[in-house]
Image (cartoon, rainbow, N blue to C red; front, side, top):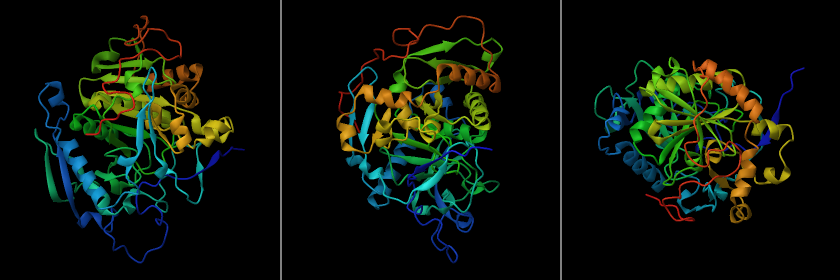
Length: 435
């Protein structure tokens, strides 16, 4: 008999329409993102350049048009009172230590809501139109459409028809329960009812957004089902945080690849001296090369029921992939009560080192040791990680050569799982610079 793993959980609210999404309505009449309203609507449009990475490759000056517009529109929605709380008022600090974990006290995300049964043992689950999904979001929560302008220049229109006539539009909407300044959702082809499942086209779109943003402080993240995605409708998250994430500073070992494998320019490294085991993909002759390699790795994980998280960093040029098992351990009763009491669900942002805490006592007592202890529970064992890595390489068309792995690119060069010295933060500890 198949065992069904479930955990009681309180879903994170990402839209003001989520609470009553299952209530019957006579017609619509609320200007939503569904088939009833969106095709005939007009929304702001951000059209990105044909090759958003080209400007970065040529090291030309960037106007950072996307980030400027996104943050301006986000602040407009804040002024309209569309968020459930003011995230800019949340206390934030950099925890002293080798990696500089970032802790935030965000009591607003602890919602007293009816618990629901959430299945954690299936990474792929069919889209259910009866449950909350992003077609039920009101258009006032949308910042703009995000489409390829097929030209050499980007542009923004305050009012534009839905231009993707041959397919559903991509939209960028606010997360009404934000983790950080500028927290948004990138929803590919919103009308296509795609489940939370990465495919090459949608993953390339996320890389294009990161490249177009042209800011190392604007990152995108992805959580699969079973790895703390709360909505089974395809989406990426993104926000602006003006300090390095700890994982971006962690030591890595470059994995030697065969010459044939390296023709696409993609390199792969393994994180070391970090509490969560993961892979780092970089380079690529084009954004599409990098997107294809990583999306193929993700497709193997989701097809083989391995929960995972993805961080898109460095303007789309560096991608961290974390297979994880915390929710499974939680469902099996293998997580300590001490960690469960924190009510922290370690998704992509927590794994990357930005830890959102819901209790003041946890925030005031936060240390590198406590952060390490939490995240270590997320990681696959070394044996399981190496097994998964081999399957990922095969699925992504990567062949590891017989050469020895290079020394760590940072840190002491050891492969033990313990903190190592890293480059000091560009800002004082305990201070976050908001721009």
